[in-house]
Amino acid sequence: DGGITQSPKYLFRKEGQNVTLSCEQNLNHDAMYWYRQDPGQGLRLIYYSQIVNDFQKGDIAEGYSVSREKKESFPLTVTSAQKNPTAFYLCASREVAGGGLEDPNIQYFGAGTRLSVL
Amino acid sequence: AQTVTQSQPEMSVQEAETVTLSCTYDTSESDYYLFWYKQPPSRQMILVIRQEAYKQQNATENRFSVNFQKAAKSFSLKISDSQLGDAAMYFCAYFRSGTYKYIFGTGTRLKVLA
Image (cartoon, rainbow over all chains, first blue to last red; front, side, top):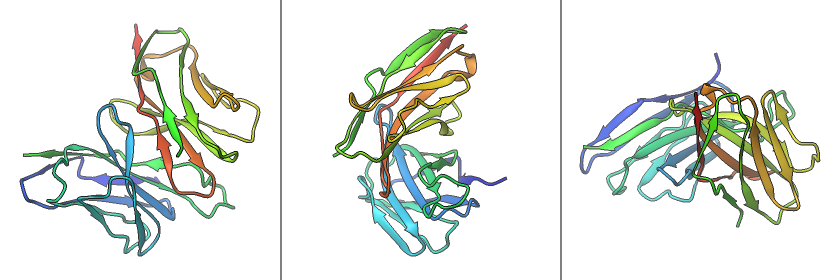
């Protein structure tokens, strides 16, 4: 089945530690996103990537880093500079080019990773 | 800048009844899309329904329908014959065609009472 896989489901970070959240998609989508979800704040964009080896900062990129070495993978690293990392993190993707069967305006989501600080 | 507002943090509905969730947005653009996403306790975001701004006809998906008022910048979701499985957070989202960014509202928690 095609979809977006996020791992792990739960992650714990120690003080001063960097942690990496995995996001893999087999939908052949061009664009991938990382969102942070906090209670009462909806989804806030951390990073966005439209093609391999290119990505842009979103609204709350400080303390986070990403890479896009392969089309299907978009890992997010939460660095020690992120002082309040406890949140639910969602990865999403969408087809950009259009012209095919998929609607390029619809975003699809993974099941999320819950990050907590020890 | 575009904004999306969901003014109802929480709503309740009796099973089999109808409920309407509100969403307003602010934009100066004419070509955009609006979405309702459902986030159940599993936290998986699921697309419920979408509306193209250029279409006057309101979108419908089974028990879910929208009331799209473009001039008023309003996009409400109506759930008919509510079921226990409809209990979830519902997020309204805006997307301008040709861009990359989606703007989400803060969500409405829907409780379905048996």
